[in-house]
Image (cartoon, rainbow, N blue to C red; front, side, top):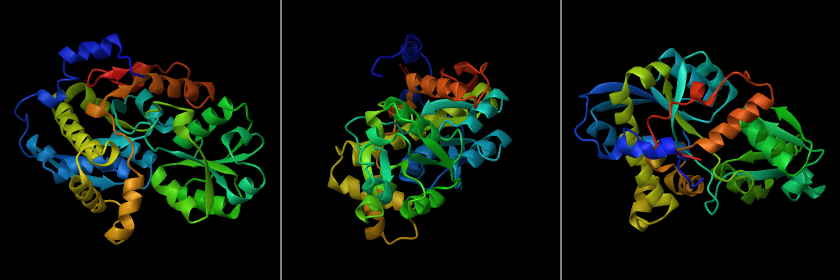
Amino acid sequence: MSDFTRRGALGLLGGAATLPMLGAPAFANTKMTVGALRFTSHAASFVALERGYFAEEGLDVEFRFFEAAQPMAVAIASGDADYAVTAISGGLISLAEKGAAKVIGGALIEEQGIDGQKVMASNAAYDAGLTSPSMLDGKSFAVTQPGSSFHYMGSKISSAEGATVSFKPLQKVGAIIGAMKSGQVDAWTIVPHIAKPMAASGAMKIIGNVSDYLPGYQVTTVFTSAENAANERAKTESFLRAFSKGAADFNAALVDKTAGAEADEEMVKLIHKYVYTDRPFDKAAPSIRNGAMRINANASLNMASVNDQLDWFKSEGLVKETITTETVVDTSYVETMS
């Protein structure tokens, strides 16, 4: 994952790697809608707004919040949102195949040594012997929908362990939590800000780390409409520049912890305006910190992971065999890793 592709290296001379260095904003008070989920993993956009990085680029940003990734992808395709962050899903790939959406950068990434997504077992399954992912054979695995990131992770983990699992689509994370608590499903993968409190409360058990199976997994990507990617380059670069500044602040404060205790506290307070807003700060803060996974510097994109995901979708018959990486991704905006 540490090697840059030749195309990515050439980006150092073009628009990709110069994103943080370009000069005056190209716009003045350009209104823009950014799709987001109320997760810590979407913090780069929140930081960019709160610290004026969007405004510095002449962008007047309004957030539109979603409950799941798929509706956000549809909103991008329909023009109801301009830019957003989401996992690569069968739905997103299909929209790209129809010429409606394009991945333009990377966001959340699994990095060994950074506390990331967890493999979970229900208490009933754990008591019956599911104490590590190596014991997954014959077990059930919860996903939201076929072709979701949960499906991809579960498939790759079980394959690595030589296990056969049955996938149970339960539509929503809340439904999965209920099924795990009641022992109706055996295993699941989920982000740390949900996994850790569930394990601490005794509701289920952590039995492994996704990063052990998918190091460098490009969990989420930055995407936009194909129209924006092709014909609104200056605006798209402005968005990515501001987003990248927000990601840098977030990583320094909560991931690398190089910015100091005061910056940590300020960052958590900033994110709390958008995440766990129904909880008092002292209750929300631990969950926000638990959700602090790496966001790619300068929105760089791990193409090795993207290609692996696309190959998996094809192998499962979830997308057309004829879809290429170029169909889904515009690699001209950011550095790419292989």
